[in-house]
Length: 68
Image (tube, rainbow, N blue to C red; front, side, top):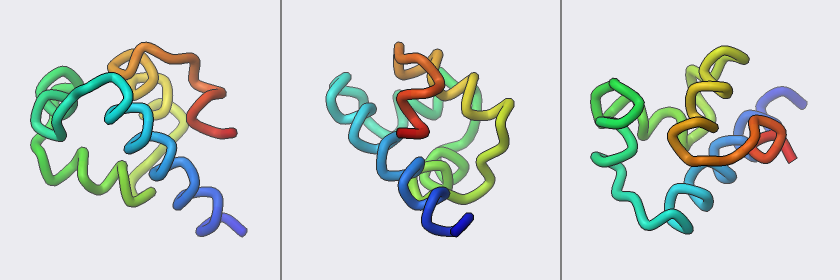
């Protein structure tokens, strides 16, 4: 079940980034990480609750929107 949730969160991150018109590199730069780390977020890997809060700020959304 956790894997399914992680994949869904990653998918939401990708969709919301694209809706905002950001490239992977722009999102990574704003977050303060390397491109590869952001790519992992979008596959649902290495996502902690604290990270969700920071990612939501980069994307201009509420944290719950990444979890729905």
